Length: 192
Ligand SMILES: C[S@@+](CC[C@H](N)C(=O)[O-])C[C@H]1O[C@@H](n2cnc3c(N)ncnc32)[C@H](O)[C@@H]1O
Image 1 (tube, protein in one colour):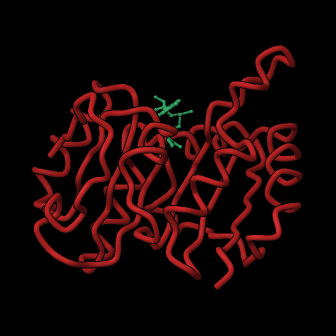
Image 2 (image 1 turned 60 degrees about the horizontal axis):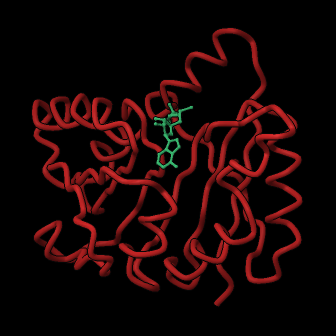
């Protein structure tokens, strides 16, 4: 279930990876997979790809997915930008989820934040027309940054924010909301 790409950058055949043709959704930085597993259980009709750089987390997700018989999940052990730049074919993804990306709160680390204009270009390339990216964070300053990067991009149109049902809330969302933090959400779709 866990796929680690070799060093040769070439786009994946998503149909071969999943063994079937179905809409593809991708959870970037899926962590321990609370959203991925519940979303897959609720949507047997989609191919769901989770990616993360921490293989230990992916191994836990794999164990839970296998126990639950979720055969339409695949896990990608790789950096998000690498996946977007080299592995995901153009116009292939119906939805991206980016939940609670590392906020890098110190100003000198802001350039490490994943949401940048170049990231958006790669997301745009991989999305099908009409496909969307759904972002959530508890970090107000990161949200302001996300809002300014995405809102100014004419290739996307803002849509109603994706609000996951309770069972699909991510591990970090459960943690942060228990502490009383507010969650900021932004969803936008690729223009046709
Ligand atoms: C704060 S956690 C959030 C996890 C999950 N989305 C959630 O909401 O519970 C951020 C996750 O992104 C992963 N991550 C951070 N930088 C990454 C990168 N450049 N590429 C892929 N995954 C990354 C981390 O390993 C971690 O699992």
